[in-house]
Length: 121
Image (cartoon, rainbow, N blue to C red; front, top):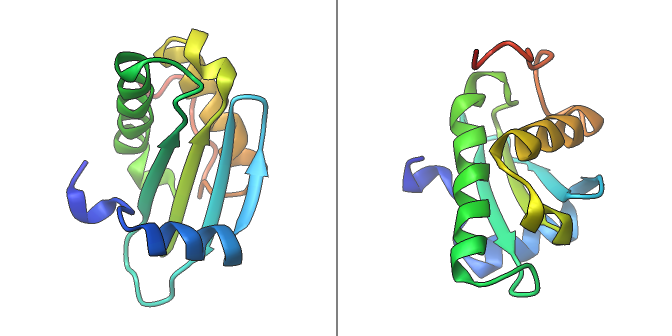
């Protein structure tokens, strides 16, 4: 995922937390904030040290980035998203994370179309 498609600055995270809308399930919390002037979406990822060691946290972040790369055409552009991983993600593999992220994005109406279960097969 290209660096310009990521939310990196603390100020940006704080604005998204304060002004954005949130939706959650057991594994993830997703904040979204509309950006009218932005023709693409950006994501920020937060994985707490409570979830595990650096290896586990980096694995979770890589899985989230891969999900957004794979489904980029289905996700609404013009938004900034912050994804916060919760404790249950430490025991999940990529496919479980993919299903959980799909679920939470559907709850928040963040996807343009229904993500197909057969997309990666």
